[in-house]
Length: 534
Ligand SMILES: *Cc1c(COP(=O)(O)O)cnc(C)c1O
Image 1 (spheres, rainbow, N blue to C red):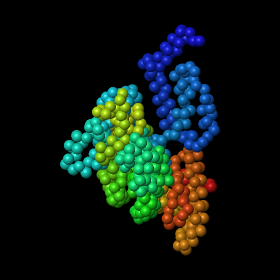
Image 2: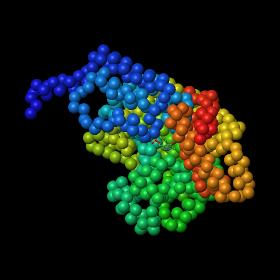
Image 3: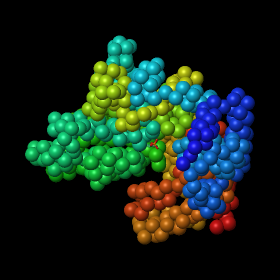
Image 4: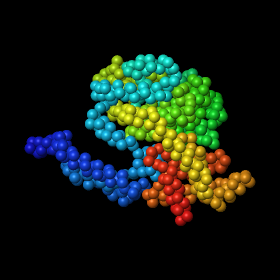
């Protein structure tokens, strides 16, 4: 039995964590900043692979019984902070995570200090309206042209309307894709009461009309989150139909037509067509206008996954590449990618602000039916006010700034492509449509042998040379990452002219504003040195 005195001591200690003195706070803050500064300056970038040396720090599964001091805790945290990946490095160009504007950590601190919960007005106050405003700004950026001179009055009327939402915030592109397809599914099956009676009952009713099932179509380059969505929503991963791509890795419209005809013949109802605007692996952008026509033709939901490439809308030079996106019923965007917001911010916009009612939920103690609580339309419940971070970005960087960031990284990708094309030991695999590009190691004499085999139609030799080049490309990527030098990622791609076997390529994502041509040249130089030693 704990006596009252001990309980009282524990209570006072717990309370102390809520009431730190200015000095204690300043000291802890200083320790954390020092750690983070040390990490950012570190040349090393350990921990990129599974590593038992790293695991040793994390073997204890004991629940800490007593509170540690801040000094003890900083010491405990040190290896993790120093061992974290420096995503701000200019030669870290393998993933979609990069440096942040310097003001973002401050905004995140404010967000934590205010600790708003945007699920409902009662816990978010002005931030519900701020979030609705941010959604309206983005909605207008993509769809505003559709309303012409009526735009101002359309947004005035809808943005704060309780029974409407121009979009919803969530933790990332995956959730956004799930929500977009959730809306598509519930709207399609609303007459059968899918939300109330369940998918089984809805599909049985659909079956009585002669349909055998549901399908969603996306190109082979579709992000794997769509397959999660198909699973979660009960559509089934196998019913996410992968449409072939052309040599630019954009959806092949002929194959789409064929697949649609097959589904029709099998009496399978198409729930949605998904266009990719900036494929994760290749950066390619589908012909969104053509996809909008297809979706219109069969009266199905048209979703655009713009988690990566959607931000190109801010660039006057490149926004034309998204033509047709204004006809999408929904658009996924990731603020934590090219809008440079810290991790945990995605959203889906809905062209028709009434569409979200397909997934509307109420609870009597919160989210009352006449309120403008955002929680009525989100998959998540309690949710941070990440819209504040994007609000800050939109105001402190602006359309011009975001446009310039896109222009810069696309230009850099084009420069890098030019360098690779003129090099004798690397092969450019795909011209960058935006700022993602792929290439591989392909020196002489492999290159001439490959060309000879291709010219002679010798498929077997093509495959075996490509296999060797893939092995080398993989070995170089692994060695470069292990050497903690420049970092590019790698992926596998099917290239029609190389036959059925996929080839392994380096993948470069250029979005870090610190990255310059010299860093990219350095990466190639490192790869050449590694290749020589293979
Ligand atoms: C990153 C990405 C996603 C998934 O977004 P998360 O924020 O990682 O959940 C979906 N689609 C595309 C095209 C992406 O690039």
